[in-house]
Length: 91
Image (tube, rainbow, N blue to C red; front, side):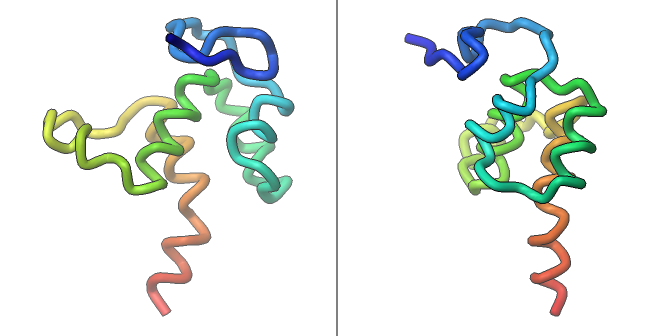
């Protein structure tokens, strides 16, 4: 059973409707304004952001077993939301 995002669109419905700022707050909480602007500019969907968040949370083991790399808008969102983490890990 799919959950609904705050915009009322069913999560996982396969729609390509770009996520709203409200969707970003629902999924990602308080993120940097620059990060939010970059994601909104991409036109990523609610589902793209969910996939990126799943990978960022380290739940990608199941996906990695499928041998499918993260790409497209989900991959771009992943790069944005993990950019600060990558910098911190290099120190």
